Amino acid sequence: MGFGTQAVASTTVGFTIYKYDDNFMSVVRQAIEKEAGQDSDTRILMNDSQNSQSMQNDQVDVMLARGVQALAINLVDPAAAPTIIQKAKMDDVPIVFYNKEPSAKALASYDKAYYVGTDSKESGIIQGDLIAQQWKANPSWDKNGDGVLSYVLLKGEPGHPDAEAHSQAKATFELARNLANGKAATEGTQWELNNKVVRVPYVGVDKSTLE
Image (cartoon, rainbow, N blue to C red; front, side, top):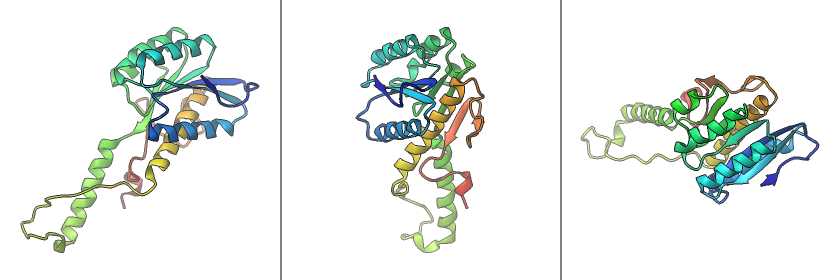
């Protein structure tokens, strides 16, 4: 278990990363630590779950025993969310899941459970709409003249994973900090909460950038 910011902080939030050697989650972890480093009132306890759900369960037990005021959990197995929620619920500790989404039923089982992550389905639909618009506007793209788009390769913006990682990290840290201090999850932040879920942009495309 790693300590984030200095021990004089008045608020402690417990974090798990499902495994440190995942490239994307490594960037997320560094971004979370950076966010915490800029807040002298908040200390984080960071844990590497090493792709083991049983280890993560034990880490949650330890953090709760140490009196964390909120949890931020990157699940190893999304199906384990009810187990983690039950642990947090017993101690009345709020929890923010991030990156790996629990079921809606699991989130609904605890009024202090939330999720931060992307909406890849919405992004895919938006990308498909953009491609359809451009296909109609550029007849020359139809190389064989059959009127059918036979193949398409979708690629995210260069450098996008870092941007997505930092957005997830910032949202997760800010929600967990608010909840740890007894505030509404998104109070004073830029994030929009919908059915206990905050969606951050995925592959650089969302409704605000559709044009």
